[in-house]
Amino acid sequence: MPKSKRAKVVHLTKVAKKDKDDKTRLFTAIRTASDEHSHIFVFSVSHMRNTYLKDVRTHFSDSRIFFGKTKVMAKALGLSAEEEYQPGLHKLADMVEGIVGLLFTNRDAKEVLEYFDTYSEMDFARAGTRATRDVVVPAGIVYSRAGEVSIEDDVPVGHSVEVTLRKWGMPTKLEKGKVMLDSDYTLCREDQLLNSNQTALLKLFGIVMAEFRVKIEGYWSRESQDVTKVGAMDED
Image (tube, rainbow, N blue to C red; front, top):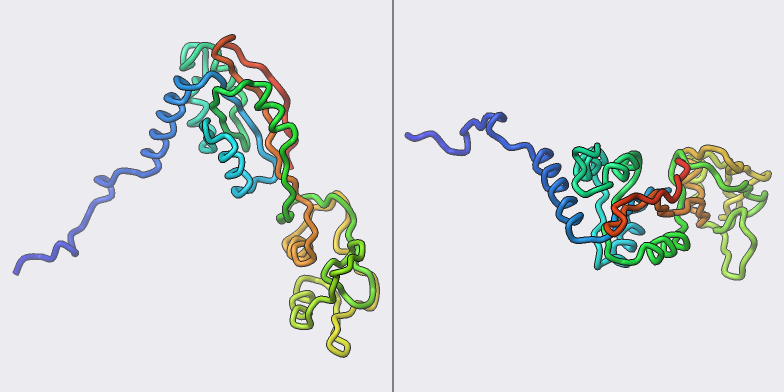
């Protein structure tokens, strides 16, 4: 009886590495985009969120945005004057490090700079983010916008959440079906590094502290064949 093909052993040495293929595709795509666009921008990201980066991609649908392995992107541009793919690109490659991406576009440089200068989105903080302000939950009934200015549609948190609040560090208790605090509870202080419990509480109360921003570090122009430095973004 012949052996089943399902039981056939495939040696790993004969299997192409997907990672290597991905790097090759990225390298080739960047060089192709270099031929097709008049400006290449290096941008850094603060509080990375894929949802908002997708919005940026939509805005620049006539352009190309790459957010991949920085070493591959830098090598595709050219790490030295001898290796650069276009004249002057090795200066841009020096900026490709950290949390950065590349934007290839034929739009005017001033238009691109003005867009990113004004674009930002607020979101919930993640663990390791620094708090932007103090948040203190007042004593008494715990409301859905704890520590915030009262608004008309503010409501007490549901009793079913009380166990979760205690799990995340709030010393709450149930009294007649209401979630209560005996004293003010300091959820976080400004500039404090937030942990996962604090970020979960901030999200539960609808308090955002992370600002997604894209800042241009510098850009290359085909016309000048040179790089213009714009600025560096502080890491969070």
